[in-house]
Length: 172
Picture 1 (cartoon, rainbow, N blue to C red):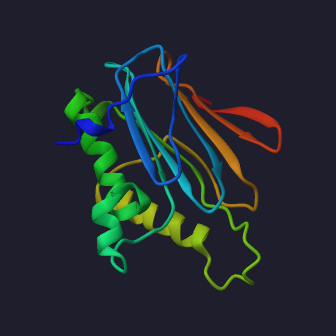
Picture 2 (picture 1 turned 120 degrees about the horizontal axis):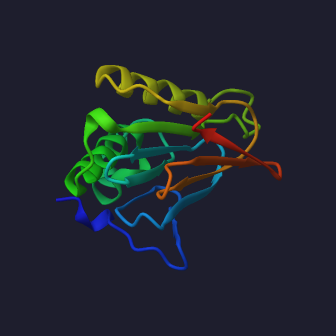
């Protein structure tokens, strides 16, 4: 059961931290996550039920750290993404109605491109979505800058802020 990810808004906002996942059926809530560098934020929204969720994952694969994945599955794409969808389905969201967006996956660390965490995160996310027939409605991934991602459950609007500038990611 994934009901432990159901969150209530404080002052209208639900903050999703690093390696965190939250879902809500509160149409007045806004889910927000900060500092998406190489990490990726994934939003899921059902416009019919106004159920939404957000995941902020750090790393692509849990295979090298099964103990960490058991303790915190939201840390990894391969364990966190399925959990995000499952938690939304348990609240009543329907796969056929979902609007899915993603942001982050930048290369911001000066590691001479050795680790390429952002690139690896983007790659696994696309593989997971492809295998499960999930289409991204919109994304703002790659590059070198950090982002803030928010999902407004009253309308499903997805906003991105980066370097002091904001824009609507979805609907376009």
